[in-house]
Length: 469
Image (cartoon, rainbow, N blue to C red):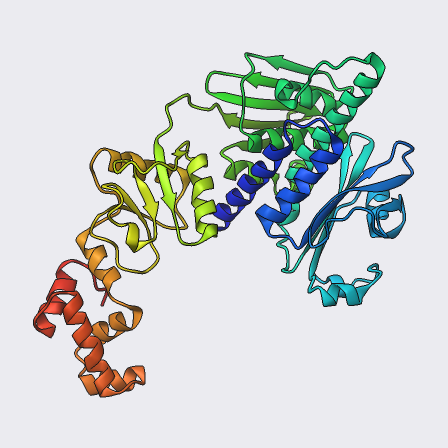
């Protein structure tokens, strides 16, 4: 799988977790939905969230999912500054370790070994100058360094949700009213205003709904702008784009220093924005007296989504292609309509639609397949495949590909050596197999290619460009 594709899938999973708590105004419920989502979407061993108590001196365990679900154990209350969780809250520094049992700060290393816990990630839930809590994740497998940025994106949305919930509770206490308020009523501009604090935010154009992955990136950039003492910020909605512009007065000495400064401040946000279809830029021209920062996304296109059914053997593939379909603007449905395109890697479903989109898994492509995709397929390519089969055409399908996929890896080796002029005995020595095994493979090749002789089989493969020699 391409690295960018994996990053996109991670961000889509973050969106699903964020969506689960996006309409709640109960801090503990938000925390529980977040830990449940992390365990479910990222296969964590367990996840926990501690929230700061009103006096600001203690952390209270509010949610625990996975291996441990109780919130009344020995670590249910932790003083800020004590243990690793308390120090993360105090110092507000995130941490990722893939060698948990050997860390000097772990209190019971034998516990980590007994439960096969190899990695730990901790992240402070901070907005402006206020700490709301700490998120901790434990995993049986090592975590990629990029996951810290993915986690940062989720924590931004989580912190904003907790802050809004906290403000709502304060308003309820002050006003003693029961007026219902949900996060769905809050715009991107409102959330940005909370994060930017005293920085004046200007909004231009008509506000519209955005994808959660885009909102998370806007909020993360705003969180960074707050630390840079940003003195100007504008959110603009245009017909074909939505972008955030800001100016900060921190001035590195020269252009090269500005580039390095931008990379150190924003890190992987450049690549995350690109993978999400956006563009994060820093203007470093020498003539400019301040640094200009902008984040832009194309505006959503209001078109009727094309329907697509997805049925894959592996739950991972099912989830991955479902998220890819959402990114492509397709509507994933569960109907059994024969004329709705079906994306699958299951031969038993080859007759379930007249518009089969086959997932390439190095097996024979069904004759009913009208299109072929793989793990490197992009959202736009998937949308093209669905649109193409709906028109009655084929996408990345040809006879030569069908023939080539019919042959196993060993059969392809045998036929290639046969084409180079080697005899059965020579092929057997080359591949370290017996003469009878070579003959067995050749007979299988003749059957699969519907050829009567070896020469005819070679001719079929070479004439259809199904054999590289």
